[in-house]
Amino acid sequence: MQRNPDKFWNPYLAGVALGLVLLVTFLIMGNGLGASGASYRLGVAAVNALAPGHVQAVPAMSSVVEERWALDDWLVFEVLGVVVGGVLGAWTSGRLKREVLKGPTFGTGGRIAFAIAGGVLMGFAAKLTRGCTSGQALSGGALLSVGSWAFMFSVFAGGYAVAYFVRRQWR
Amino acid sequence: MNPIFPIESLSDERRALGLGVAVVIGIGFGFVLERAGFGRAQKLVGQFYGSDMTVLKVMFTAIVTAMLGTVILSGVGLLDIDTVQFNFPTYLWPMILGGLVLGAGFVVSGYCPGTSVVATASGKLDGLATVGGVVVGGLIYAELEPAMGAFPNSGKLGTFTIPEWLGLPAPVVAALVVAMAIGAFLLGEMVERRVNRQAVPAPVPVARRWVFVALVALAVVAVLTLALPTGTQAGQP
Image 1 (cartoon, chains in turn yellow, green):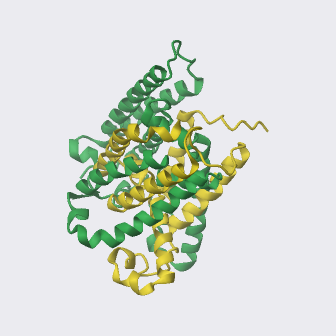
Image 2 (cartoon, helix red, strand yellow):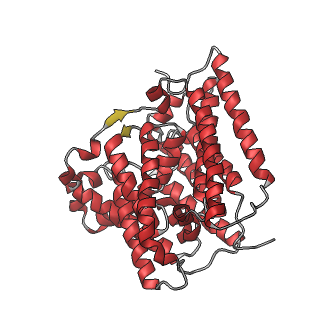
Image 3 (cartoon, helix red, strand yellow):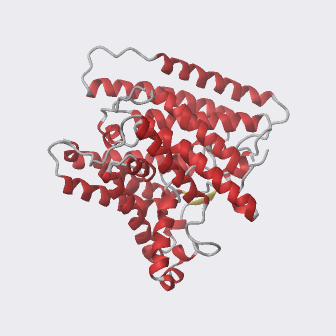
């Protein structure tokens, strides 16, 4: 098998494939794809293990554990699948490698700090927007939801506004 | 047609099966994201520096593909689109402000929440750090939510679609979105050439032409479903 780590699918064909996965999800599950919701549930499950009383005291956390364990949710299982699919895709294309992606002149510690900081911003924002790029922009966008489209344009605007200031990490 | 596994309303045995299906769907999702290049931060953030418009191309093609699928299936009466759209209510202000913050987080971390999972799966430690950040950020939100008062629920418009907003039938809006997407793709490719200083445009892959032709053809089919008497028109009140 040909393994060139720099060879990717044609973006338009990849888009069609992604769109078909999404369409099948709509038809079978009656819901869209998602990601940030699963990460959130992981956090709540951790807090619940350490301080169950605190979870009960915070409305946004207690609502997640109301009926079942925080991780007993379809989105968590879907994201488990994403991990498996990601490993399969990376392994079969020669991209499965432990590394930190960054520009050659930027420090590893700085890059990890940026990654954590950006993650915190996104984790916070995705709760406010009731979904991230997958759950809101992609899924809601395909269903022509006004809020999802407003969200999508905002994501691009926010990205372009900040890009200049963090460009050094890729140099 | 109704969803086969509407996960919220399943009995326990069916629910277990539904969760298994969710894993299979996730595998497809993760594999496609990886193969599109979305496990690599540079490929994702290239969007914001104009050097690599893969995000625009993949995201928009996916949105348009799934949109045409739902609009056509709903147009021929095979899908009750309202039951799916019901899961995507609009809260305008938090979505706009949150979108700006999420976009900022995207270029700072180099990933979005979903692609950070794919990056982690392919061994990228910065992807793992992003996942950790997303988990912590969600918990911070939960702690601060009571202090935000009514803002998270502001601009509430319920299930509100672009066809409803514009007062146009969903297939017509779908056709307009296809036209807009193809325009955005051509513009994106132009920006890529400028930024990467390519004097001579690279040859256009055959795949691109066929995808464009197929999308336009499906948009025409979608509009033709308007002539059918039985359609449950997407987004129509």
